[in-house]
Length: 254
Ligand code: NI
Image (cartoon, rainbow, N blue to C red; front, side, top):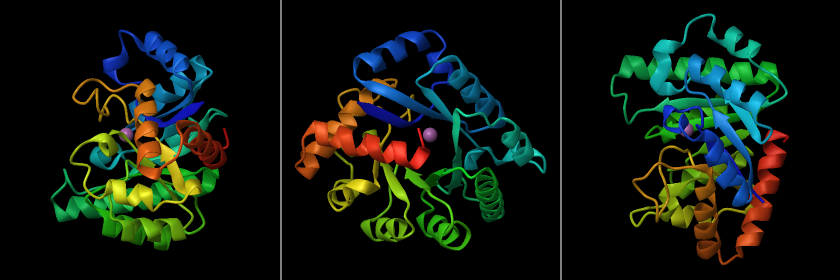
């Protein structure tokens, strides 16, 4: 079986056919799917979906591109959403690709740290978004999250950064970009990753892997990421399925 450890099935792009998407995932042996909120509204939505479908789990949090959605009460509101199907805080982190303003980047850092505190209070692991902010993300993990566990989702950093992440006991999550021709450093990073530090994910509806690139992504396609990992690492698909599933179960206690 496979677990898609990072997805956004609450997205409008699934309104028409969400049940069929889940049927296809089941047929492809993608047996568990974790949806992550980006705003308060989407956090509520992923929790509702997790109540409705047994194979769905949820993470709640405010994404760094959505900091205007965050105020003094937000962490308390997120905490109130927690049920036994809410298994993480995320996705939270830093995005310097879309945010160029230095003041607002500081606000992202502050909100990231506050939500790491929330994870600590709730005793939950963390799913981190880091886009073009590898240095500051690592610094915050090293100073503010030593007692927490989590994953750098959709990993796009260097092998050097990954080694520091692993030292903290954090994992890296790999998505569709691994299958792209211009996947840059990622193949070298995954070849050097030990089995216990890897998760597979889709980030659907975004980032569909080859041969679906450019289309709407969905959990079924996590198998394409697993196939690419198997090819690059000289493993069988069954091996990749087994250890990535074991890692997801261990991190998220599902
Ligand atoms: Ni995401």
